[in-house]
Length: 393
RNA sequence: GUGGGUAUAGCGUAGCUGGUUAACGCGUCAGUUUGUGGCACUGAAGACCGAGAGUUCGAAUCUCUCUACCCACC
Image (tube, rainbow, N blue to C red):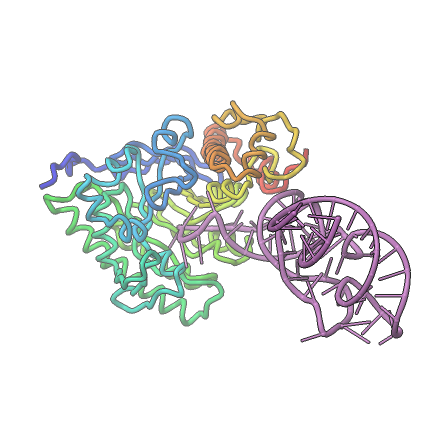
């Protein structure tokens, strides 16, 4: 049997609001794996690895990552959550000892649309790896996440696609609420078991409702009544709707989210999206954009977005971002990185991912400093637009 | 020296029983990427078809000459 290393006595789910500027919040979220300074960007390592060859050690030592995000569905398919349980949980498995948030697999209901069937009890998938049939419902998702022993588990939801009919969105939301109730029941049971690696595992509920104000608000009201949730997420955004619609939905839902719990905008987004969402009261973010874009040679700088493979950098001796002090920018020129991309060297992706993650993590640091010093509004005015424009120099 | 073969974008090839703006891959250039199945996807530029002559309404395509390269035999 597995030796329990985490006490079940302490209450770790503490969100402390340090400062507020308008709707924007500067906070601190205490977890069993350490305290998270918010607003925070979680670095996406779907299969217990940041794509591009960044290890947990790099993340912790150099890249200022506070929280790593892993995916329930992917890890269930491979290597199997039972394997990770036997290996002592995700933290031990990947040698990452700060907080981990596991996504529930709900998003894969949406993104693997061609390979699934949704029913009341849960979702039938065909595995993207070997095609075998997989069933996942709220209980399965909670059991898997309990085996993974993440710090924060996400509720199993349906991410409604955009556009969607009002009637379908409504039925889907109601089902997602019922699923959340089942998640809570199952997680309570799992956290009480002697064999559970992390009995302090927390659950975040997820708000849905497509782009319909009434559904969003109604759903938020329903799920916030479920007191067990340690935080709440807004899901189903940045899936094709215009940016101003996304901001509008956040503005509509935010007043109904508990002020004493963290708010997490799932899957978002660009640096500008993040600044705008912090401005509207969001505390947690995650997005594949910094890592995926980096692998495709798009890097973020303080003065805008650059395509590192462009010819104009052929003889450029400057680092990607002259104002950045990440390991990549401290050591390598644009000319060299462009060459690595053109030559299809793995190192190109690694250096660029390293830079982009550092950029996102330090962007959040700068947002927190601005909030600490009461000048977030000014920060937003300076950077919100600039960071999402193409770099010209 | 004789016989045979090949010459089409930067590279490798398709088209060659003659018929509209010569196709494809790689490379080049540019762009996309929002709770990551797929290190992926989209687009653009670029050759007047080895050179010259001929047949024909019309030639990358047929004929002749030349040049270069490859193979075989002397």
